[in-house]
Amino acid sequence: MGVYLTNSKNKTIELPVAPAEFLIKKEKDSEKAVILGLGEINRMGLNKAIDLSIESTLPVNPKQAPWCTAQKLLSSAQAYIDWLNAAKDSSKPVRVVLSGTHMNLSANIVSFEYGFQDGNSNEYAYTLALTEYHEIKAIKTVIKQKVVPKKPAPRPKPPKKIGIGSTVIVNGRLHRDSYGSGPGVTERNATRKINFIAKGRKYPYHVTLLNGGWRGWVTAGSVKAK
Image 1 (cartoon, rainbow, N blue to C red):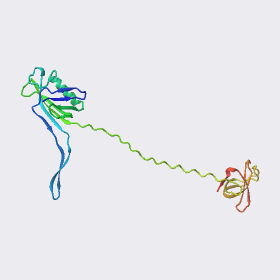
Image 2 (cartoon, one colour; image 1 turned 120 degrees about the horizontal axis):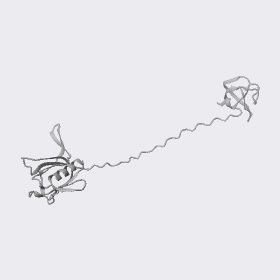
Image 3 (cartoon, rainbow, N blue to C red; image 1 turned 90 degrees about the horizontal axis):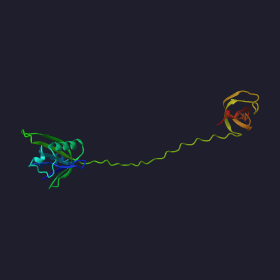
Image 4 (tube, rainbow, N blue to C red; image 1 turned 180 degrees about the horizontal axis):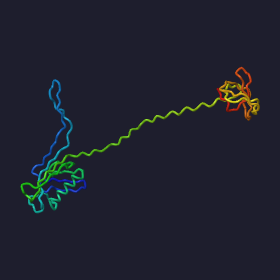
């Protein structure tokens, strides 16, 4: 049996000594609940990520250790240690393949513990813990919003045309003629009527009382259509 690990750079190693045990832990996410009239039940959920545990040894000089099972060996135990630590610290998954089985999965190295045991300095004892990795890709969703056209602002009403007979509001000084001679009293918000128009003159509008009584000539800016 060979255990092969491939890192994110597509570099593969075979662990030098096949582990005596290769433990795979598969669990489901379950929850216990008490149902009235039934008692305690177990609600089964989805599968949890698979946990792997590998315990074996790394000979200090693999090529001089006849008990190695790997076909291709690295130069030293330290080379294996450096490879495994680099894979763990990269925070990227490794591919785990167990020869002769259907075991082939992507996993993260969550812990790597190693050291000498029983005073044996010829090999490192180690424990390698891995957890199954599932890649999650974000899916971009485009939501089309219905654009409601804004209603155009209402156009202002055109000013009323002022002509003979128009009722107007007068704010201005009255004059005797359309040339501006003989200035008289000043009208304030007075409601009047137009009875004469002298186009092109400085005081073009002649206003009267509503009953027809004459008042005088005013400027165009002094009158406003009512």
